[in-house]
Image: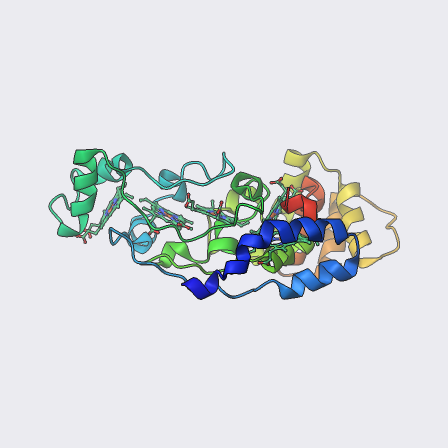
Length: 270
Ligand code: HEC
Ligand code: HEC
Ligand code: HEC
Ligand code: HEC
Ligand code: HEC
């Protein structure tokens, strides 16, 4: 795919250096934003040395992402599983399948399987996995429905403007920590009283602080009464009675966790 990476990309670090010197102006930022290619890599789906299916393992057999990608929450880089992880099961399951021949071969020789890398951020941009996962960004926001893929493909552009789209409005993309691996989660599934009670209990927020988030967002005059009941009543009045929305969930979590993703060039180009 030589035309995806023309020769001038070699000069990128230099260009960034120059841009960093010139920056500070919103105009520059705006220009870079619009010139960044956005959809170049979406759909990239290389064939792999073993026909491994996430759909079979995750959707049909209920495996957790962390069984194989065990560092996603703990380290800056995610990891692919070792052959030993596969052999935990494939010593017994389908142990003579021809599709698994390369896995048995790797097990015998000790040479790792050469998976083809799909997602990649260039070296001149800094990206840390665990920071995102631990701030309520689910895998599905950045990788799509991997759980339903027979062959993994790149679902999101992972370009600079894509990073920035989320960084300018993280409230549209964050969710409670215990829903990170639930790819079907929607804000409407949250129970409002339980959601707020948990923010008070786990994050030490008071009803007063939670009410202030809503007031500030909607530019309301400060309320007189400020107990838990008043919080629920206000949020139902402002956001609607029946279901929670991403706006409500996201804004509260953003405030409770103090989420503030970098927007300046040096935040990602260090
Ligand atoms: C049984 C082990 C296993 C489980 C469970 C698993 N994966 Fe994977 N994953 C792999 C292997 C092996 C690869 C490399 C081959 C491929 O791309 O299919 C991979 C590749 C990937 C990639 C692409 C990596 C790249 O090169 O950019 C992503 C993204 C990914 N997995 C996400 C997930 C998510 C999200 C879950 C949970 C829903 C999950 N995986 C569960 C084994 C697993
Ligand atoms: C927790 C157990 C478990 C682990 C770990 C596991 N698998 Fe599987 N795998 C299964 C099951 C169960 C099936 C489905 C068997 C069936 O269709 O009856 C399967 C099916 C497969 C198949 C299809 C085989 C065929 O003949 O249709 C391949 C290929 C495969 N796995 C590769 C891998 C690879 C590569 C890894 C390591 C990254 C891995 N598996 C890890 C349980 C596991
Ligand atoms: C904020 C976006 C984002 C989120 C959330 C995210 N990823 Fe990634 N992931 C990326 C990017 C970007 C890369 C490429 C990283 C690089 O080049 O260093 C990547 C790479 C990977 C890889 C390939 C690692 C390798 O060594 O080739 C795997 C596997 C993966 N992610 C799994 C997951 C899983 C599982 C989750 C959920 C727990 C997850 N990711 C959440 C953006 C994300
Ligand atoms: C779907 C939302 C989302 C996407 C997409 C996303 N981020 Fe973030 N990013 C966040 C959130 C949330 C934080 C946490 C901010 C905080 O803790 O204050 C964050 C924090 C960061 C940080 C600061 C923390 C650190 O690691 O030092 C960097 C750098 C960063 N992101 C880079 C990137 C890059 C590069 C991309 C694109 C490849 C990207 N992000 C894509 C939501 C996102
Ligand atoms: C949220 C993280 C983030 C911020 C903030 C950011 N960048 Fe980037 N930038 C990236 C990523 C990721 C890439 C790689 C894009 C790709 O691979 O398509 C990139 C690529 C670039 C490139 C290469 C051209 C291209 O798009 O291929 C230049 C030049 C650049 N950035 C300059 C800047 C400048 C100037 C700023 C400040 C106005 C800035 N960046 C702010 C993440 C960021």
